[in-house]
Length: 493
Ligand code: AHR
Image (tube, rainbow, N blue to C red):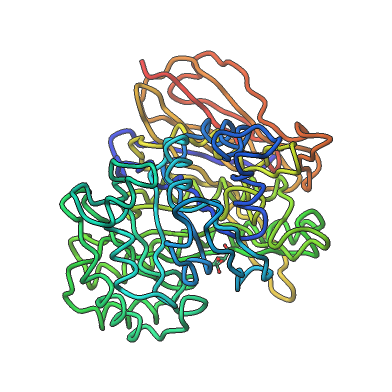
């Protein structure tokens, strides 16, 4: 059996793991909002004011720190006034991006804020730069956040919410290099300044304005954007998108090389974090501007006969999530927020729904296990393991043989570990460098079938197995099963 080691350095904190690194994203796309989060108050499916009760209950257990809405590409064709006022009087609009279906606007700003409140999540609104105006976006902000006696604040009160929503996070457009207006970085930077000039805190919540960053790890967009932005001060964050894509014919059909290829691409998010932060540091050495990964996750080939961007979610997706979250934890001091795409029925979803049924995905279980890192103090963790060699087309590549992260919160050490090997367990020595721990809990998510997934008929095919463990001591050995995600929770002594 191959050998590996993990060393945790309790005296070398890497920074607070902000809760927002475990964020989510919901777009008017396919069945994410309609049928996923929202069924409407008249639905026979159990709901709270139109928001699905089963989905709410499942997501609430993850303690989602933030929910981003209404897009995505949809954000730059969304006009917020369409989604307020009596639902029967709201206009029906064609969704340009995702299948030309007609949006009822039944789920608008108030319904979104109510969803966030029920979830305990901070709202993050993506404004419309592509087809909107600075005035439209500043009015949305006033409508949401102004507590005084303005016409827009009165309108909000008339629509049932006299108290301001206090929305802190505002995206100034989305993917403005593409669906958000096809700007070049210089033109977007100029637009960004024009919009941001009028986006104020309205005497209430302090804003974090999020500028559109690159598609993946593009240095060109970042350098050109910041060069043009100059010393403009009204920017709180800068958001990259990173989809690791797919490998193999479908979400559930892939060979071992394709398993490794996708995990290897997922692991590349670490390079994006370090490269983009290093580029930003040249323009912002004091790190006043936070790095955000606004959308991330797998994107498999389309599944015939289902709603747009619906995909199954297997053990492979679970490992993608775990590898990504471990990278966020290890680089916590470089990141402000990360939002996986998307929360229900779209891309790497937490839940899948069909009529009155709902199933938790393997990715959901990873978010559930990893949530004990949220708000924890990240610790430097050195991992050594033999690399895994695999073929990607004609090329030979190497994947790290083990990954993980560690944090401490509330007297508990969380250590999460991924063994990406498709068939071999990995024997590992774990050295806590003098950290005194008692017993705790061990949870393992794995399966013999790499493509194992949960269905409406077999919803528990893949779920973590949890056992109680005695104190393992300051130095111990553990064998990590092939294709597994493991979480230790150990009480500090
Ligand atoms: O998440 C799906 C789409 O992916 C989003 O609308 C867009 O921002 C990205 O290209």
